[in-house]
Length: 291
Image (tube, rainbow, N blue to C red):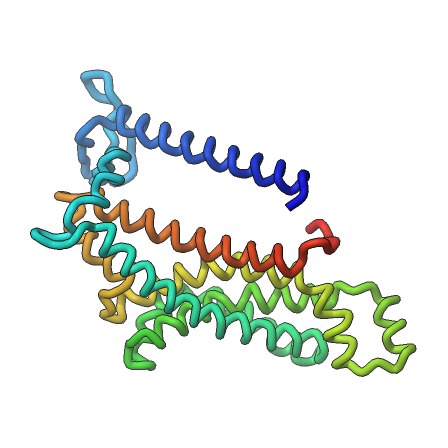
């Protein structure tokens, strides 16, 4: 890693640290403003000023302190059970495996569709509206149907992850394959290069920055898809099952649910960083156009 890249990494690390600290401060300030414990009211979203000169947050939310959230990792997930962190790590690996399978199939589908659309304009004009329309269907409405059609199981969860993955890969692959300079394509044609040669020697290398951008977006989306897919599937070994379980006991132990949400975010960030590392290894030393 050169000196410029090192400085950029340090700046990003400092910025991320400052942002996390700001979020923590804002969280605790909300606790101070809302009161501890927070009051509840029938109006689900309003703020109301009442004595003793404190803002009354009209909600059933019971936000725990940050130290309570982190402290819950060491507490038993259930009476006489293992620590919560052990349960969540096992659930994170389970959900991550489902997401990786869905991500792989979704990325392959998106790349194939983008390649076909780039070479067959008729297919692009005819199928692209349906590809776009597929993303307007709420995933919460689609997930139960997929579970029923595929008889539940982790395969149906992977399908839901693939569904959220393929769209950005399709769009960015199509855009990337169309990005080469027309003069470069004319040059390839003047050398009697086949479409296959033009694809792999010109279009695909030019499309790689676009494809990796889509893969980074899809990596986090696949984690979300896996968690959502686990909710109606009856799978209780993943993060979706943990969220559903701890949500039932939120009033008595909100820290466990927030700890599960935190682990879910960490899994998504980890997957994003894996794709980012792969992008750096593949594209290092190359010029990447500014979006």
